[in-house]
Structure formats: structure tokens, C-alpha cells
Image (tube, rainbow, N blue to C red; front, side, top):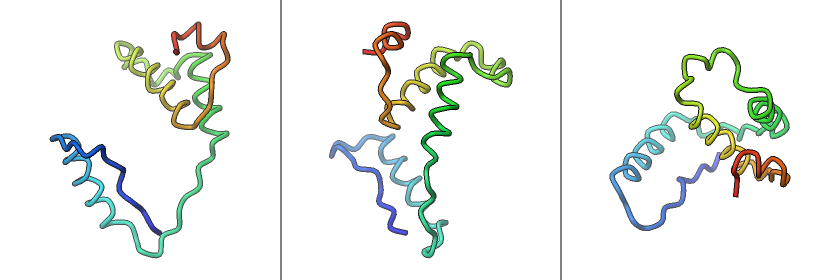
Length: 96
């Protein structure tokens, strides 16, 4: 498996150095003959859509104060999966 480190912007910071160190440690533990795992995009989108429209599962109740972050990361996950929101959803959740 040919795994490349995440690209950097050329401006190292303490957190980007830690990120690079973490990636190096993880790469040491991935077998050379490992195959790339597939991403079930549909399953991820279903999970994220459910959380966005129906609310988070009860197991997230302990993180009630973190709901703004959970919403942020949910919408960020859609962006990472390259899924666009329609105009109504964008307006409802304040997505630019």
C-alpha cells in the first residue's frame, strides 16, 4: 500500500509537527502488503444525514454541550465526502 503523508502548506507549526510524527508512527504499524480499505460513501452519508435531520443518537447525550461542535464536524464530513447541500439545508444550518 502506498500511503503518503498529508500535504503541508510549508509553514510548520507545533501541531503540524505532531501530526507528521503521529502519521510516521502509524505508518510503522501498517503492513507493507496491506490493501487500501474502501470507503462506503453511501453509508457515511446516511449516518451523517440521519444525525443532521433526526438529531444525534442518545449515546451523544453526555456531549450535549458539544452539540455545536458535533454539528460543525457533521457538516465538515459532508464537505470531505464532497456532498453538497441544497439551498434549504444550507440556509437552515448557516452553511455558506
